[in-house]
Image 1 (cartoon, rainbow, N blue to C red):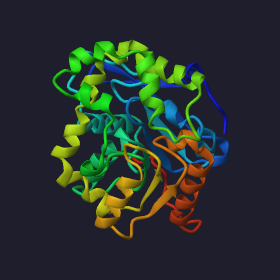
Image 2 (cartoon, rainbow, N blue to C red):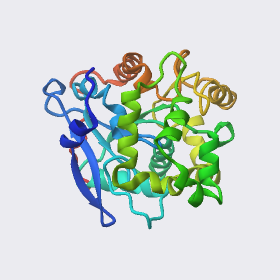
Image 3 (cartoon, rainbow, N blue to C red):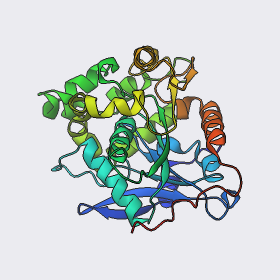
Length: 310
């Protein structure tokens, strides 16, 4: 695992056009992955970006073709002030990116806000004659709306006072609220907090935070569509959960196990909301073990995502 700065991360990426806006993404495969590796799409959370995956990146690219966009409104992508941000639109963005790369079949690795995007993609897949998604791993996120516990700042920004409250959002308030969702033994460093804040404020992104938070209501509105993708999955599914997360930790897993007692859950007992940052080695171990179980015998493995969509 290698620590990569946001500037280096950006320099190694590309962009594609979506709805008249430029969307940043990473697309990489290491030589060790072979000629036709399976595709892994990494879907980041709120309020961060694809850089969330940087500690996992080198290991994942040795096995997969890894594609990780910054969704519109996040990271190094455009952040238009006049835009109808939604989970459904972010799912459209992912499908547009994959179509532009001629990728049809793929695995998902998602986190937080990205879990909801993954749930929408999974819901769409159940309506297709030929499903595209081969498996899904979700890290901490509000996959059951009734068990999601947003932070006070999120509730404030998502409410009617959001357009006013967003003006008070600064690096100091961000550092405090962001650190609170990490485990007490695995907090972000001051340097990491500066890096996260720099990407949030890129293209004045901190001024649209309230617009992005509509996803919390969207989760409630789409519960009957999205929750079954986790409680009654149609593809291999694993959850990796930092139990100390005050937003979607142990309390969410407890609620989920009432609905789906046999759910495949990897519990990280001393970790908070960002397992891929707080415990990257253990997250990688859980990812690789999951995919090792899925791998078909040699010779029976289907060609990776480079399939025509005709």
